[in-house]
Length: 331
Image (cartoon, rainbow, N blue to C red; front, side):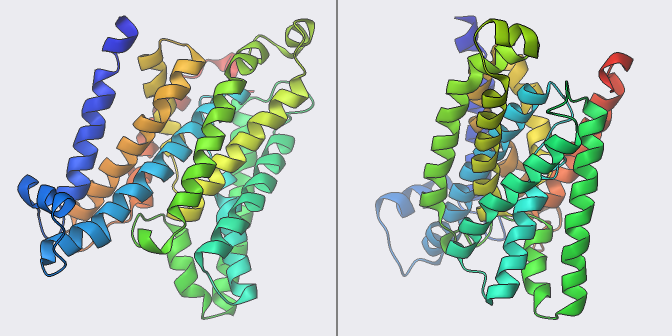
């Protein structure tokens, strides 16, 4: 009963996020206007056109990307036992964004299909590089070591992208989207396909949850209990690749969301990883949509991109977590 009662904050958060996304913007919409658009579509009504062609796709993008990046953060923290782990902070999002930008410039386009294809190998290579540089195969990867490896990989990839922008003028428009995430232009993105990828990644994480909890007891003890640590790590990296690649493919590199979600879900789930992964998609989607709504309101009618808003929210969270680490954890 207690676990059920702890879910009511998630429901309220999700309701507030959906209401903000659909109802608030340059043109505010009442609950009645939203209901009419959903039940009696009138293409001559400007309010309904705004809702159906702009805000509903924006809502769908936020739901899929927020769920993906929130889950990815939970899996990375469970895998590394690192409270600073985050797909953006550890370079995974940078790898996906780098692959998309580079491929778009080489091939000469930045369509939805190209984005979806290239985001996944980029995320996979970045995740593997950070994990190897952080000592993941040699022993227990420490928070500071992994964080430094992620910062180094991210800096390298973004430096290359910056160099491409300086060399080629046509790279600027592509770079503007990928330097900071956005939930706009949802109709131009493969939302349905990426939603299925996120669902597959979610199911994989739920299957891996008990194995990750065994791995948290130590590699030797996990082996003694019949678990292959390398296979569990490989499965977790596959899940992170699917989730981060899908999120970046439709929303761009959104930093710190995977850092903010796990502390919230741990409080709601009471320390049980499978329960944490059950609520993580809803918490991640709600936080991302609320950040996007705040970004549209704070400088209206201009818009602050959602990637900037999550960075503003996540910066203090990162400092708080880093300061709360015990000396023995910062290896």
